[in-house]
Amino acid sequence: MSFGLTVDHYTNYVMTWSGYDTRDEWEDALDRLYTCFMKYFLTASDEELDVEVIVTFYDDAGTPQTPSDDIAMTSIKAYVELDDFDTLSSAAEAYLDSIATAIGADYYTWSYLYKDVVYRMLFPDYMTFTLTAEADPFSAEVVFDDVSTGIQFKEATLSMSDVSLCCGITHDVEVVFNKCDGFDHLTFTIENLFSLCCGISFDLEVEFGTTYKQVTLTPSIDWSGECLNVGFTLGWESPTLDSISVNYIGITCEYGECLTLAAGTAFPSVSWTYDSITGSFAPDITLEAPSDWGLDYDVITLEIDGTTVVVGYYEYEYFDLTFCGPGCCGGQYSVDVKAYWGDRFVLAWDAQNGVVVAESLPTLFGLSRIEVSAEVPVIGDTLTLTVDMSYSLITNDATLDFGWSFSF
Image 1 (tube, one colour):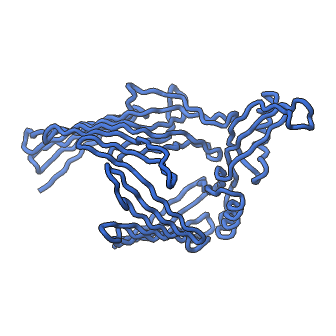
Image 2 (cartoon, rainbow, N blue to C red):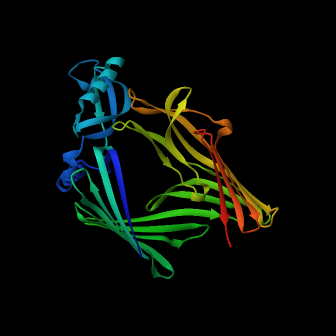
Image 3 (spheres, rainbow, N blue to C red):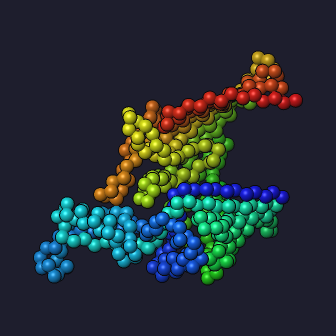
């Protein structure tokens, strides 16, 4: 049995809530938040409702009192702040008024979907205390937090993993409690519930809440030949199969005992988001690829030609060559060479149009990263020298590590 305690401290921490589809759901969620976590409202330095709205600008042509003969000039999407669900903030109104003036529009209308609303609170200081306990197959995680008003319970998760059901099928169980509702939900998950053929399988998830039951049956395809590995996602809107997406294609070739070549290409879906409160960018990426490929993505700050810019990047392709041979002093040396390809962009926020502008910033041959690892025996299998080198064409950072391993 094992126990753990993790303490995290943040400054200028932004907490977000989203995912409610109707106004009633939002109002109920905010009421419960105020009731259960009133301490948040005592120390939050800022709170706001943000949403992407569709704005249509009109020319008040014809009879001014008759909207039916007005002319729609253009429509834009803009990420704005709301005072409440019916009212734009003064900053948002000024922003949209300036656009209307610039294009000569007489007025505009705006609309949004409740599911796109994000409620944010900004805390000068925020701490979490996470207690964990594990005793196979059980695990527990209990989270407390503190917003400079004292520690309070936040949520707890109890889990069981790989529990035998029958017929060789195993399942996972998760129970979640929170401060506001007590019991939140109970989830049963079964991976590979049944298989059809050709690597097609189905996963089952059943979630029970206090007022609902949700059943999700998810199909997937993982077709692997002797050298080829292909990952698919099936577009499944029960009971209709409406699409098949190829997520990645990989190949592994072995040439004898000491020479292996592997390569793979993923097909991620990538966009970039901007947080108006923190002024920060983040990747919105769907990257389905084997974890051992080691593909990476992030948003970083770089100095380019004396100017500080925000750069977003993602990797989508890799090449891995491993080989080995007899060492000069006994034992066997091994070398692993990896190369990655990716795209990088300079990111900027276009406040007028409410969009992230991504300008391509190419690298040499489209490479993003090169890594070389080697193990060289010095005294047979007893003493081995290890060398790890890496160079990023995204950041121009290089690392070189030397080490020794001793075994007897």
